[in-house]
Length: 215
Image (cartoon, rainbow, N blue to C red; front, side, top):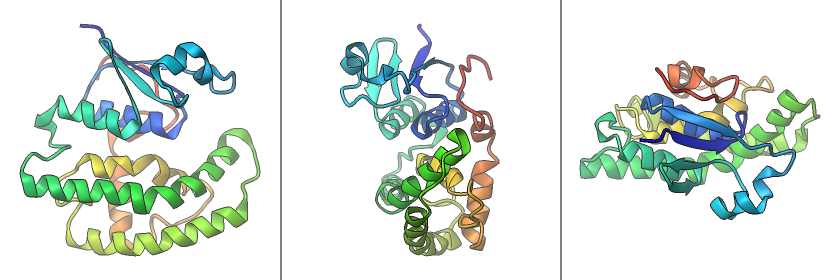
C-alpha cells in the first residue's frame, strides 16, 4: 500500500497539527512541501485537490482529504485502538464537547495572537502588539474556564488523552513564543500544557514537520 502523503508547509500550524497526530499514531507519511511564498497552494493543480488553496491536505492511497482536524479524525478513526476518538457514547460526547470548545473558544484568539509571534520568530517581522494584547486578553478569559475543566480531570475530555487535547498544540505553543506565560500561570492549565508539549509526537516536529517513515 502506498505511504500516506501529507501536502503542506513544514512550519505551518495546521500541518504541525496533522504531523503530530500521525506521529502519535505511528502512521508513516511522506511530507510533500508546498511553497506558500511561491504560491504553489494557488496553482490549478493544487486547487483541484484543495479548492480553498490552503494547507494541508492528504493523499491516502488516492483518497484526498483537507482541513487539519478532519484529517486527524480520519486517521484516528482508522486506529480506534488508540482511543484518541472515544467510542463509548458518553466519552465520545465529552470528546466532541471538548473539540468544539477548542474551535469556538481557544482557537479564535490563540490563532490571531500566535500568528503574530509566528511572523516574528520565522520572518523577523514586528508583531502587531495591540492585536496581540487584545487577543491574549480574550484568551485569558477562556483559559479561566479551561482551568476549571482541567481541575476536574487530567485532559480536556476526561482522564484519557484525545484528539481534542492535541488539536490545541500548535497555537498553544505559538502564543508562548513572544515570552507570554499565559499557558503556564494557571496550575492545571500549566500541567496539561507542559505534558502535551513534552510528548514525543510534538517534540519530533517542533522544528518543522518532516517525512517520517519509521518510528
